[in-house]
Length: 358
Ligand SMILES: O=C[C@H](O)[C@H](O)COP(=O)(O)O
Ligand SMILES: C=C(OP(=O)(O)O)C(=O)O
Image 1 (cartoon, protein in one colour):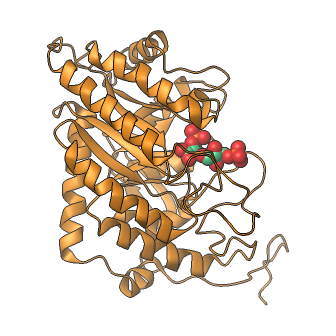
Image 2 (cartoon, rainbow, N blue to C red; image 1 turned 90 degrees about the vertical axis):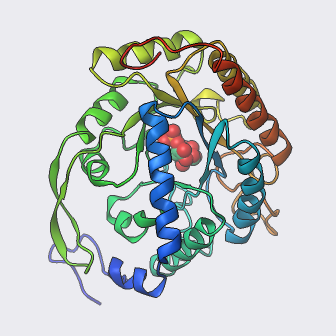
């Protein structure tokens, strides 16, 4: 066993270099081209040259890859049905940030038993993302630990920096170097300014320490990511209502940013009660239908079955979240239908020629 000089942490296992993991689980040329196209399509919505809604939907966390793939296959058919109005992106989250302690996601603990076999978690996580990409859906991923990003980022078409890390310089630096649009969540208590600051900070170049492809510590350079944007996820109070969305758009304009944002129907906007997500989506659909062009995306936490369960339950119920409660499949279909109808209605409201297109 190797002991660090100051005895603060023991090395309990080693990980492969990112390039080695990718060589074992390679992304083929066809899917790579598909992901490049997905990123271009997501960017077009973020920038406002595509008037569809970006809908990031799927489980809070992937704990059972087979169930998540089952969900993804169902979503593929629905995404095709609504492709004229919605760009549907699968939440494929393998890391969970915790408010205190708890299961940190499939990468950290793939057997859900506290074994914390990160090497196996990375292998299984990358394998899952490859199979999920094989459905043809674009994938969404929250980059919780910047150290783990180089193992997986080639598979992601929309990235998130979460409410617990959005103020952190390492996450903003990472976002500046990511090759896909990145949503910056407002802070846990609800502060939107920190998400705007994160989008601004990640929009400019940074030089920062990280892991090179060969696994060696390296100095990395991010060119700046102009497709970073804000995601309103609520806080102490929700912020999906028309007044809150309007004032966030004003803050973006005042900061010199594009007045376009996504709203998360879950988390602080639903009080983590999945049964409230359809009402949040209905309100967002109303705003869209009435001509709110700056509302460019919606996030929904959804899985095969509604609700959630304790990760320690035996047996675990198939298709039920082990982290935040999710909408079930039937309600998810209702949400997508409402959002697609809203986009059709919005097309009847011409955009004002403002920088944000609001
Ligand atoms: O999205 C998932 C959770 O909200 C996030 O991981 C925080 O969870 P926690 O507050 O239960 O730790
Ligand atoms: C953790 C998440 O969200 P937030 O950062 O908004 O809490 C999430 O979307 O999984």
